[in-house]
Length: 336
Image 1: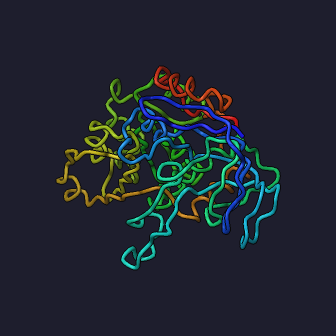
Image 2: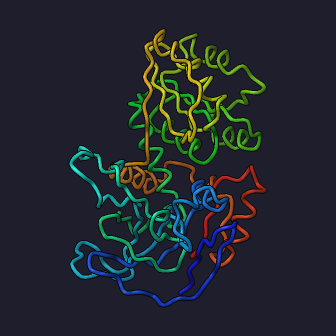
Image 3: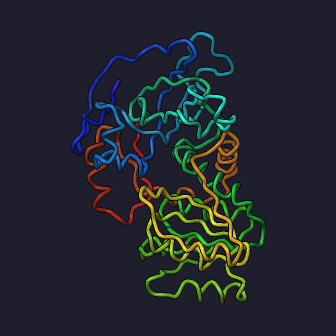
């Protein structure tokens, strides 16, 4: 089989290796497609070299078909379509309170252990979710990031007819907007990239550039001065942190989707003054995966519009290099 490995220094190798039999408790997947995640790009840039044990096959946004079943595994048949929820919680302790998706010793498959950017992939059976036979495997490769969006919207307790402001219109921001709209919310996307603004508008969203429009005044006009019930901070920049407390209305809920690696200034006064809530949202739980799978199966979301390109696995070096030069891109899939 063909496999890829991150070698460090913005370098991937492509190699041939023997297909391995699944160990007890494992399932071998014939990988169909793998999406390139922002975390994968961070790995490519060397930002996670202290964590990633090189050389390593990365990738975790994937779809595929069961190819072989290891000893002791039940409930999966060869030929079934599946996706992987790439969270290994086998280090969970009682102090984690049963919240396994963010347990202290959580291992992220594709970062802390080999991932999906290879033609065959052995994984623990407990991370698999089944897909319907009719599911499009290209769209299924978006289930992992879509599950992130489902988790964010669920924790927000978003209700129909509420106004939701999404700060950041990249792949995750657009998926959050789609899930929020499907939940019946009135969605406003704030994004500085004009190409992404155009895409959002073509998809039926209200989208504005906060460097050209006063976002707070815009939201006020759209809501008769009530402002937003829910704000999703997806961009990870200080400007969004500054405005998130301004566009949230009285008792608004702010969901922190972005990963802010360094402390940032926050207007705590606004939390007092408007009785705001700040909700942390990290990855997903099994029910979020099932919700994402159901949305893909129902074909309710225009997910195909988010696929910028589909490239062969052997072009991995070119794919990662081109992502740096295409800020307009959304989601690139590797065909395995």
